[in-house]
Image (cartoon, rainbow, N blue to C red; front, top):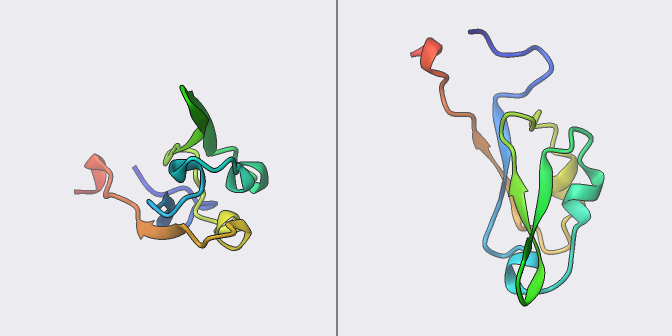
Length: 84
């Protein structure tokens, strides 16, 4: 399987510094994601937690600059089984 032409060779990663992971309500990254790859899962006793769907993520980086605490980074996509 070849890589899609509209995807970069990397994906976004939400780090531990994420406000939502630290119990502060924030959904900035999900709101700006053009692919809707960042969704928020409800949790008891705190704000929703971000979950990134690597399949949907194009690696465009729109979420990087919007994060108020720079908790989002990029990492290389894992090699697909057919590429190995």
